[in-house]
Image: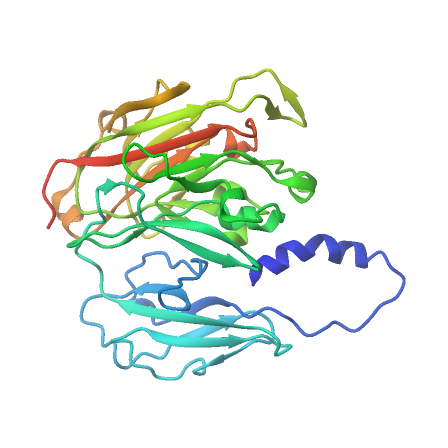
Length: 382
């Protein structure tokens, strides 16, 4: 319910202008903000507390990775909650995490609750799938509406749940059906379904906070709703553990630019274009994930190992094949086999209907369709 905080900021500011001061109402938030465990058992992998509701488990999932050998049956996590909220089972109580444990957080005003399923697990030795056909989708509830979340599941692989800015777009109140959101699916794929990314207007709320458009996007990583309004580039966090050395990213696209390009408060004759790129980088204790700043910094970062970027993006009415080669020479680095086997590298693929969408520049209506995407890698899975 942290979304409510963002939406009520403006209303709160207006209320401060009134001459009548009232007692603060009980808080209506019911969120886990952080989960504290002994630092020595954690692998250092970033924890995502903002994953969307998962209908298959009827809860909001939180995954926490701990070192091999940790006794999962005797863990007592301590939780930081939104103001005044309570949690059951109690914070600090010993629980058996050999299986996921369900926690219910109740708001201070007792009117709201949220159920979490917390899985504490050892590092996976499986890579994510490398072929993406965009056939698997679920709807995630938001108030009385829903938006799409895409995922990839295959035997012998770790399930990959794609991320997007849909959760942020939900704040604008412009998404009345799943197809109103920037990231969705189309049945007109090259084979079956495909992902469909559309740059959307964000309405009066978006315009008020300097975010007039939302580019349809899809990426491997997570979306931090807490940063969406204050630092949008930090909200898109790119990467997941990968145990293979990527060589190429190939796939098919269709693209149609929107009629009018919006930037700096006005529409211009500038032509919109899309972006497709992939990152392969090393994780370090101080840098577990890269974020949306990487593109604005021309893909430069000390942790980068290789990058693949489309350089001939253009409109196409028919399915058009692309093949992007990972450039290792750019960063003068080679892949360490031991680090690779230990899961010390991350991969991310990023797709956007408007290349400058991260700067809130783009043409509403610009539509990018992607299908039959594949990472071609050097070595077999472990």
